[in-house]
Amino acid sequence: MHDSMTVKNKTQINIVLNQQKEKLKTESALFVKEEKLDKHLPLKKVEKELSALVGMEELKQIVKEIYAWLYVNKCREEQNLKVEKQVLHMMFKGNPGTGKTTVARLLGHLFYEMNVLSKGHLIEAERADLVGEYIGHTAQKTRDLIKRAIGGILFIDEAYSLARGGEKDFGKEAIDTLVKAMEDQQHDFILILAGYSNEMDKFLRLNPGLPSRFPIKITFPDYKVDELMEIARKMITERQYMFTKESEWKLRQHLQKICANPEKSFSNGRYIRNVIEKAVRKQSVRLLREDRNDRKALMTIEADDLQVE
Image (tube, rainbow, N blue to C red; front, side, top):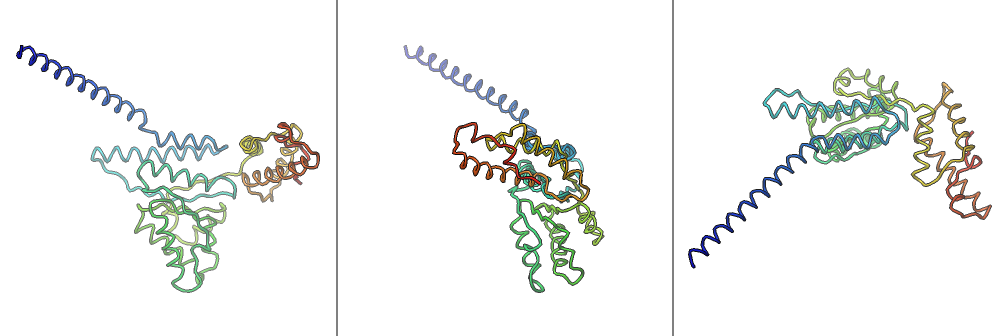
C-alpha cells in the first residue's frame, strides 16, 4: 500500500514538472516571437505619428535613415565591430508653421524609445531665454537651460538671432556656451537649432566651426495649396465641424492667391489653424443671431463664416 502511494506521488510530481517545463517553453517561445515582432516598434510608432502629418515625404525618409543608422550601430556594437561616433545635433530650416517643433517632439520620443536619450523631453527656447543683461549672465542662463535639457532635446527657434548683434553682443556668449556643451555633453542631450532657411545659412557662415557640428540638416518646405486644404480638413474634422462646398471653395481660392504671391508671408499650418478658429467664432455669433442649435447647424462652417481677404 505504501509503495503504491509512493509511485503515484512520483508520477504526479513528474507530470507537474513536465507541465511547468512545457509552460516555460511556450512562454519563452511567445516572448521571443513577440520580441522579434516588436523589434522595430520605436520606428513603427514614430512613423504612425508622422503619417498623420501632411506632406513631409523627404523628412519621413530622413527619420527612417536616422533610425536605421542607430539600429545598425547597435548591432555592430553587439558584434564587437567599430561603431562610428553618433552625433545627432540638428538644424531645421523652414518658415513658421511647417511642423519643425512637432517633428522635434516626435524625435525626442523616438530617441527615448531607442535609449539614445534618457528622458526624451523637449525644451523650447528663444534668444530671450539664453541672452542675459551683463557679462557672465548669458553663460549662466545658457548653462541652466542646457541642464534642464539633459536627457532630452534643446530646441532653439530663430537661432540666427543669437548672432545679430555682432562681436560685442551677448548672443555670441550664448553660442560659445552651446558649442562647448555640444562637445562636453554631446551624448547627454541633443541640440536642434531652427529658423528661416536663408537666415540659418547666414548664421552658419558667421562661425566656421558650426556647420560640422550639425551633421543632420532638415529643410521644411512650405505647404502647397492641396496640402494646406488637407490640413484644414483634418483640423475641421477633429473639431467635429464641416465645410460647405462654398466655404471650402472660398478657402481654396484664398490660399491659391496668397501662395501665388512671391512676397507672401504667412505661417503655413499655423495660419490655417488661426483661420479655422476665427471661422468658429464667427459661426457662433451667426448661430446666436439666427437662434439655431440643431446638430447640423452646430457643425457647419459656411462661406460667410470664413473671414479671409
